[in-house]
Length: 114
Image 1: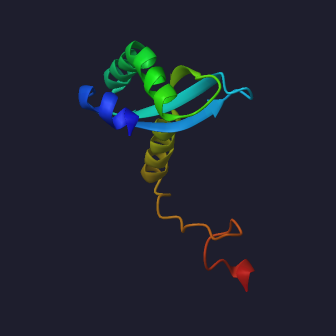
Image 2: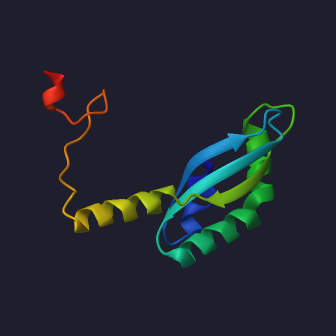
């Protein structure tokens, strides 16, 4: 909600927090985000997050009871873009119609299931 209210209205693309890694003492937090948009949109979002970091930390301190408020460090999460690239390569190779895997990791309806 904080990202939607404080960041999203000022960025051209869709900003999503994808992962947060905290230090064991909760004094530091690595915040990973993705942006639906081009490279310039990523840069714009990162600059805005860095600029708004003191305000975001203050809002976090006001809404979460911790001994220390974590220092936020922002990183662009490249995983969604990498996944899209892999999917487009599979599509180009005609391998995008591979059946979904079942709980055992094998494609549903695999002969080994019988």
